Length: 575
Ligand code: HC1
Ligand code: SF4
Image 1 (cartoon, rainbow, N blue to C red):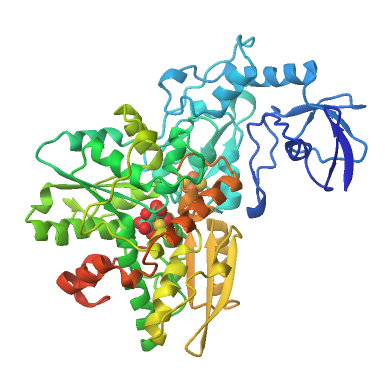
Image 2 (image 1 turned 90 degrees about the horizontal axis):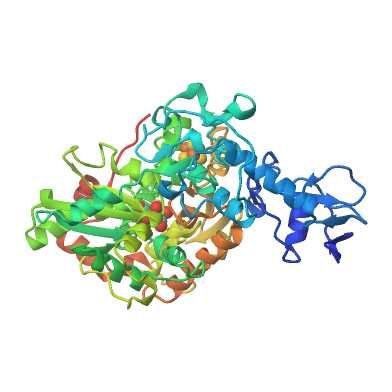
């Protein structure tokens, strides 16, 4: 252990800790900008480029960046000397000198790290005259808008994309004021191997990386009297939406969210969770089918569109192993336009399906041509993120915190605890095991919690004995971890039966469309705990017990994994 003082407070901290983290142990927050460190997931932006976290260390001539300077025995650190504070202010002034000043109309207004830092440091003048750049804004993709003019070269996006996701879309080019983070060969984002996971957006401190805003499209549909507008909400949205209204991370707002959506004018409010239960019916059947017929294992979950795009680009030789199930929100879309429409005699062409997702890649997924009946009638018409929904609720002047809880609409609104846990890493596999166990053994599974699959470790593995056979299963989140495990499968070093893969750290709760996680693991844990709490509160916790799902199969689909199920609920992948 190391003994030292920070602002005259003596502390003992472990060797190797940074001064920044040491200060946080005694509730002293040194401002940061480029810093990004998700300790448990081994995510760290080493770059120390912004120099905003400078501190005074006794006996040293220069100020030191606290994020990258390790603690030492006897160190005497001051975080608040006039010199340190002035140096930080200068750094921010330099950043602002060539930054657009259009804060009022910036999509990141009031949610921007640079803006709040300038406010906290009381920057009132910008003493340096920098020249603003004039880069083209990249609007090529259906998911991400990239405005290099707002880039402050912190390179968090680069660390996220290159080291955590191992996709390698970005790199910094140029020197000094001319430096900017760009795609390789300056290609439009759409033409790169970007998976649209949105993790670069989740950690960008400014408005340089944003989701494609589709709120206007939703308002237009809602105000078109000829449209029957249906909305569905993903599992992870209900444990994060409240943050947009000042509620604690991990507050469950399912009922308020439903109420808000009705007030916004949606004709029906459905739950993606219903379709997550359907997904389990299909995926567990597919697993049993592969086991009976000697099909290729492992089976990989296919509900995360960023992960799907990743393996299409990076592992084309493995395209026969993912489950062919569409993702739950796509299933809910197609079921609305078939089962629901036929049951109530509504013309499916008049239905607009809007998905509220924690995810940016779902925007791109909804536009995939195979996910719908021709381009004319996609399964899902518009996708907006959790953040976009909070903006809509605010635009409508709804006092979210004061809303009374309401229930989802019938037919596609009922769900089990198994579907709720889809929203956090390990949940899809746990849900599938709850059903597969009972189907394979014919016995009741008493203990539904699979603890080994829970938590924030990047790769989780377990051996699950079912009816005399040991099933080797794994869960990964973060695409780098997926790559690691898939490469082992390619070389034959590892053998599994089932693997759950999610692109975002923490799974959907850490999605690129959620209130910004800023790389805070505690926040992700609070959301995950809320997901498990919601699961525990449900009277039914196994997908195959959902009465509305059983009715769907009895009245409309027939056998799970049968002919009609294939037509509606399954898809294919492209090299
Ligand atoms: Fe997800 Fe899914 S869990 S992908 O993580 O399978 O986005 O929440 O909606 O579709 O159900 C996201 C979350 C979500 C789908 C489901
Ligand atoms: Fe990389 Fe994901 Fe950002 Fe695409 S969306 S650039 S894959 S981090």
